[in-house]
Image (tube, rainbow, N blue to C red; front, side, top):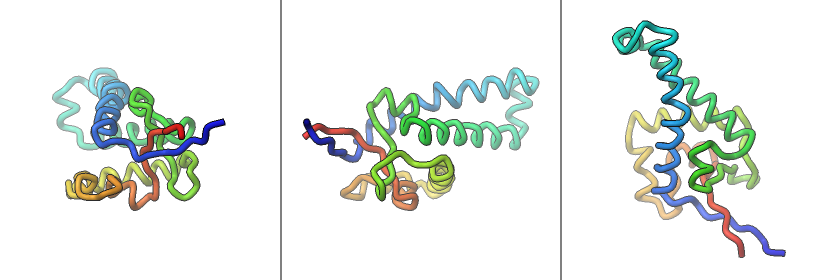
Length: 140
C-alpha cells in the first residue's frame, strides 16, 4: 500500500480555485441580494451593509465546505485540500471562519496576500496565522 504525502498547493492553482469559488458561491449570493432582496444594482451599490452581509455569507459558505469536506468547489476543481498543519486533518468550522477573517484582513494590506511569493513554503498570512495550508496529495 502506498503512503500519502502532501505538498503545498501551487499558487496558480489556489488563485484558480478562488476564482471558481467566487463565481460558483459569491456570484449567486450577490445576484440574490441585488435582484431578489434589494431593488437592483443602484440599491446594492448604495448599501454597505448588503455588501458586508454578502461577503460574510461567502465566508460562512466557504467555512462550511472546508469543515465538512476540506474542499470548496474551486478547491475540488484543482484537487486541493485545506488541512491543519498541526493535525494533518481538515479544519473545524470556527477555524475556517477565523481563516477567512484573516484572509480579509490580509487583503487590506495586500502584503499578506503577496507573502506567498516571497516565502519558500508558499504560505500566505492567513495560512501562517491559522496554521493551515492548501495542499495537494502526492503518492509516494
